[in-house]
Length: 228
Ligand SMILES: CC(C)(COP(=O)(O)OP(=O)(O)OC[C@H]1O[C@@H](n2cnc3c(N)ncnc32)[C@H](O)[C@@H]1OP(=O)(O)O)[C@@H](O)C(=O)NCCC(=O)NCCS
Image (cartoon, rainbow, N blue to C red; front, side, top):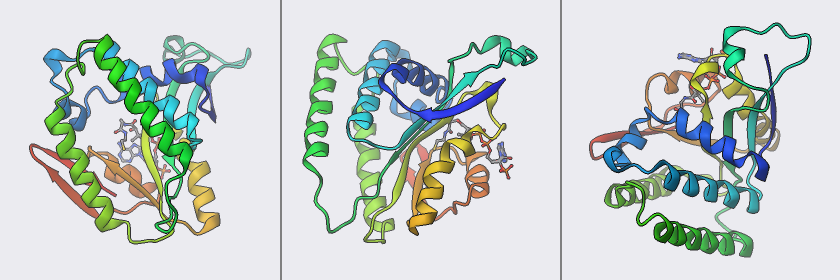
């Protein structure tokens, strides 16, 4: 089996949504912010898809890891489950936003478009699909405080907003490959990178191997969110 890392395009959104939902099924933040007995996967798919479309429209750097298979490849049991074209990893970054520069009109308009789409999703699915709105806003507020405290570089940060790799292919270097292009770009530009993870183990060790260091922890009611 071989995996290619390619930019996220609209046609990949359903596969990327599926990869995210499977990868984060046991994630502490996901399990804290959603009431799982009320979780509506279709509502969640619509929401995650709207976010990916937002990322594409805002020209955020985003990539997917896709299964490819050369005719000569020997198939293993793992390959049999993963058809060519299956998306097995996703990375999505926000580019640096310098403190001195105001938000662009594109991002402002896309923010509104995303809010409108979410409103329509609320109507279409008769609610937020199990999202605990109170917990969501606790997290957003704490995240805002963390950024205000930790983002001390006025040039801004490459912010890895999302990284996931399907459980069947973890530990094969795919996460690192998904991160590499932007981390290399940041190194060339001398810019810092930042990410957050809600899973301490094993993610802290994984991110340390990628060159990140743990700089703070955010206690989020019952959940512990890590900022790296
Ligand atoms: C975090 C995640 C994206 C890592 O992806 P991955 O493809 O498994 O990672 P890689 O194989 O590229 O490993 C990167 C490095 O971490 C190391 N590593 C991988 N798994 C590890 C583990 N369980 N413990 C310690 N180190 C580990 C690898 O050896 C590699 O180091 P090296 O370059 O020195 O060899 C993946 O585990 C995942 O999707 N987890 C669930 C979703 C999630 O938590 N996402 C992160 C939210 S911020």
